[in-house]
Amino acid sequence: MIRKTIYLVSFTLLFLSACGNNGNDTAAIPDGPIEQQVQFLVDQDRYEEALDILREADQDDRRVAVMTRDTHLLYANWLMHSADSIHMTERMPLALQHFRRVLELDSENQIALASIEQIESIYQQMGREIPQGVAE
Image 1 (tube, rainbow, N blue to C red):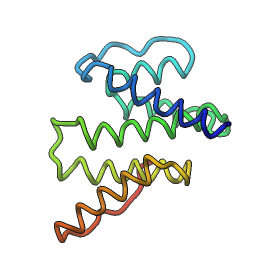
Image 2 (tube, rainbow, N blue to C red):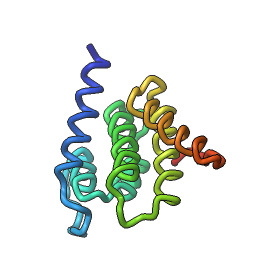
Image 3 (cartoon, one colour):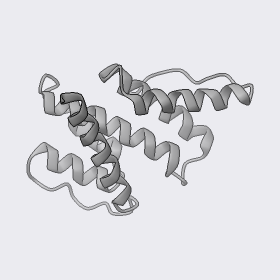
Image 4 (cartoon, one colour):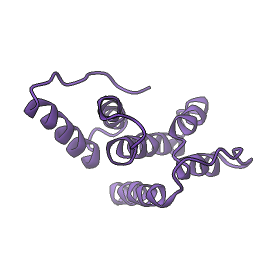
């Protein structure tokens, strides 16, 4: 039941992120709970700022751990599918790093596993070396 809830939260955050604006808004982060701040930034595709807030939070707090995992997942998906302003040669290595971070936090995350497999397969088909590394 908990796993289904976590997946539901992940998919909900993915949907909310897709519905957010395109990151052109640089409005100030609202005061309030960390969940509100992170969601505000994710809605604006300001993932690095959201992750910075989460890095400063209590990593032993389960809510923070789930938000961190979900933010890395959303960021990786955004890089893979929506970050048109960043060239593909920069986006895919970054996406791989964030998907790998998701797996460090949730080793059975099916979205991250499938996405890593897809990206690595493309690199292999192109005869290119697969980028290494994990996001912070």
